[in-house]
Length: 420
Image (cartoon, rainbow, N blue to C red; front, side):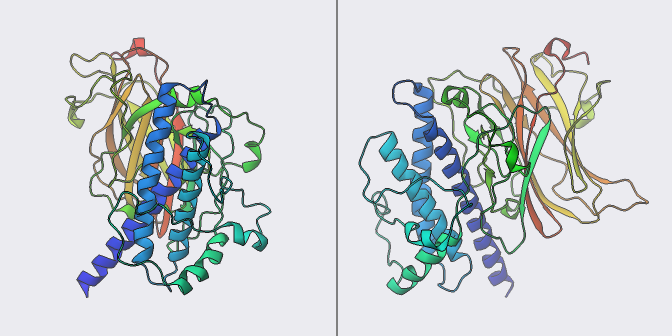
């Protein structure tokens, strides 16, 4: 019985990870394609788009496999089929926009949920063509009856359209969460500001109305920013990733790509500028001396707060590296589980997260100090550019899955690093 439960939890976790990554990649590729121009787009832009396309193509096969292994009466089948439909749509868009290939039955990019009615159901069909092009034949597809039944129901899970990012906010954050029942992704929250990098932020909950008035970022801005991605928490359960993704960002700014732990991030190509490595830099917590600089509150919502505390010294021989201690506090009456933190900085920089002190926070007790998690963050900035960092904080608050995305640019001037 225990093994069956573990297998079921593992299967659900894997599905949530895959669906989350599908949502992230679809929205990012959609955003990049919306700014693509064959003549003016740079080689790095085209390479990023190609990497995203290849990942989406691989995810489409994975989604198809999940669908074939899912029972017809499983409530998650609709989500899986919707993910497959989204992937097919954005793949077709890539072939049409980038490769210039005519697509039979070409469908439009993901639509906003507004004005989406049952009359649109026939437009949301699952494109299963080409799924086996580069993989061994699948043993068996859906029975025709079940495919027909879900092709219509899948349209009930519309994909949010990507709104343009809002103006730059220092230390801003957004969030998205879902209950254990994992509702479909049909709410686009507001996006965070970040320059327009290669990846989308995950569902942000700022008022959607503020998005429409913002201009769209240029594609060369999108790719000029971010490559450095860190997620050092091995073994943290995938349940901390909200299915509603997008990271959805809620669409938001094209930012850095958050991938689930089971998938590696997109890497920079050899032709791009190389980052200063932090692989051999390790700072023990006991060696850190706190500085006199006030900490920066990167996230504060629902009783969960994340602070960036700056150390006074740089690592030996690395004056270009800023040492920070990330502190996560819980003042909510609910426990926090499966905490995962990721961070990304512009291409000219590098960020590294050392293992955290824990991934769990006990509920708040008013007669005791709040529970906390500490994690050391190293940030290299050899070119002395203005530091801007994007983060994703994923956790489970009580029984609610949360994805929190934010941006921080309130860092000490680099000339003061090492003597803060």
